[in-house]
Structure formats: C-alpha cells, structure tokens
Image (cartoon, rainbow, N blue to C red; front, top):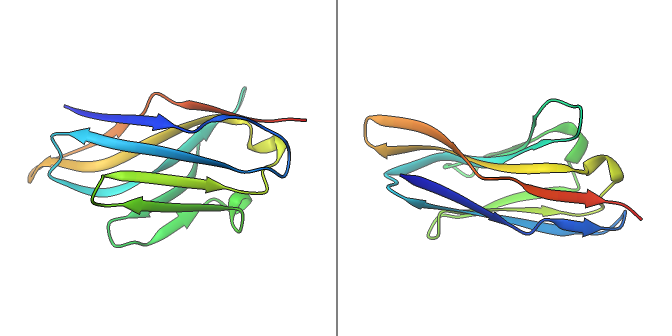
Length: 120
C-alpha cells in the first residue's frame, strides 16, 4: 500500500504565499513523477505542476513564474511553493504520485486533498 499525506493548505490574502507538502510512504520501488492537481468549485480538476524523476518540471500557464515545484527524493516528498497568490488559485489541491510499487507494477496514487483559499 502507498499513502500520500498532504499538508500546508489554508487561508491567505491575495499576494500572499503558501507552501504545500506531500509525503509518499509505503511500498515504493521507484517514483516516476509527483505533482499537484487542483479543483475549484464547479470546475474540472486541472494539473498545476509536475516534477519527474529526472528533475524536469511542467507548470500550467496560469501559475508559471508564481509557483515552484520541488522534490526531496530521500524523503519521497514533493513541495509546491505558491507565491503571489490570487483569488482564482482558490481550490482543493491534490497531490499525486506516479510510481512503481514493484519493478513491473505501475500505479497512480492520490492524496486526500488540502484546501487553499485566497481571499481578503
């Protein structure tokens, strides 16, 4: 079994910052990628940022220059530093991990979600 535990959400004023963390634990052979999706009320879930095992990163256009994804491979943990937050960043943020539990079994796992609210 693999578990993803998220932390770091909350309420912040526009222009503020938050840092999300997501730690993967359990039976992990290797991690292909980790990242974050978000879902705002009435909207589809969208990919926010992803970091691959190679260190390559991708961001959705709306967060480029404001959000930074990073990873601590020794702790199987991914971080999302969110700066210059806007009200439209308000959403539930979900961590995900694309990984092998054994050499031949690849699965995707999700965290429980953490609320980020940007409001004055």
